[in-house]
Structure formats: C-alpha cells, structure tokens
Amino acid sequence: MKKIIAVANQKGGVGKTTTAINVAASIALQQYSVLIVDLDPQANATSGMGIQSPKATIYDCLMARDFIEDSIVKTEVTGLDMIPSSTDLVGAEVELSSLSGREEVLKNIMDKVKNDYQWIIFDCPPALGLLTINALVAATSVLIPVQCEYYAMEGLGRLLGNVDRIKESINPHLELEGIVLTMYDSRINLSRQVESEIREYFKDKVYQAMIPRNVSLAESPSYGKPVLLYNAASSGSRAYVDLAKEIIA
Image (cartoon, rainbow, N blue to C red):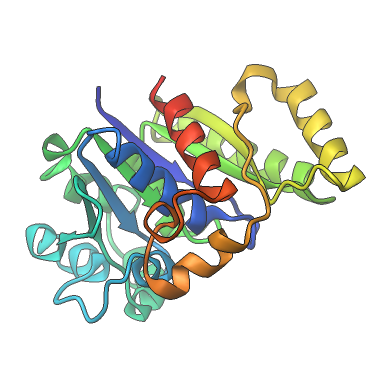
C-alpha cells in the first residue's frame, strides 16, 4: 500500500490542518510509515507538531528543488516524519509562477523520498493557488474536510470542480479519497442537516467517522502535539482513530 493524500479545502477554518495532523498520527500509530508535508505558509501543522526552528523547510525544497532529505524531521509519534513549513512560503507562489513545469515541482521533489513511506499527507493552504495545485498534481487522492455549517456545500462543489479540472489536464490518477465532516455537533439542527445533505449526494464517499467539536482538539496544537498524545481518551482523539481506520480500509 502506498498513498499520497492531499488534505484540501479552499475554505478556511474547516479543520483541515487538524485533520492532516491527526490522520497522519493515527495512521502512524497503526504501524505504518507516514510523512506529513506542511504546504501552508501559516505553518500551523508545523507548530501543531511541536517543531521549532527547522534547519530546512518545504520552501527550501521548492526553491532549490533539493534539500528534501535535510528538511525531514522526526516527530514524537513513532513512524511519523514531517517536512515543516515557514512564513517564507508566502513568496513561493510568486517565485514558482515563472518556472517551467511549475505545477510539477513538488511531485518531482517527492519522487526522491516517496518510496521511503507508505503514506504521504499534504496539508494544503486554504486556496487553490500554485501550492495546492502542486499538491494535487503530486497526490494520488484528495481528502476533503467539510465543516458542518451553511456554506459547506457551496465550497465543496467549487473544490470538486477544480479537482476534476486538474484530473483532466495534469493528473489523471487523482481520485477523491473521501469527505470527512468536521466540527459536528449533534445538538445543532444545522449540523444534522448538512450531514444529511452531503451523505445523500456523495453517499459512500462520506466517511462514517465524524469529527466533533472538542476542547482537546482545540487545545492540543498549543502544546505541539496531535490529540492522540495530548488526550487519547477524548472524543476528538477517538474520532480521528476511527477515521484513520476507515481510510486504511
């Protein structure tokens, strides 16, 4: 088994980074080798994994098309490595735009290490710029977190349209890995309504595991840990373990 998954959504605040971190950690704890790549200039996945002042980042890899081995950092989770990000990545969109083959820079870099891992997970920025396009070109599938709120369906439709365009024009192997519902609260009618509509339309592409609103999920990034290491007994931790098992299956 070898999968390269881009965790993507053009809408911000949907739990994308939380999902990338905790899915990666949960898969690693199932005895798989996993690499998570932080492609967001905000570097929230990097700080959320407790990595500070890395000697090289994904920015260095993209600009020099090298340094991939130097940028890989081991995390607290056995079997889980990371390529961190930094705010330098803000300029990558502009710097990449003048390169030939700019959509495939990340894919060419990852080709050097992809055989070292069973799973590679990209945490994409909340926009369909060159960084996200590079992730979708390098990936075999896209995992879409969807917040259980009013505009969820609209944003989801736009993203899937862009995924289809990338599949048709650049990466014919790109598939929809699945849709995960985040920030779910069964006490709120809107959460249940959004769940019902998305499940009715996308059917078995929607995971049974849903990520609840949970204090531990909100707190764990400030401690630089995935929720499994921060509070393994929390409902958020259990939900991500269940989600990882579904993805593996």
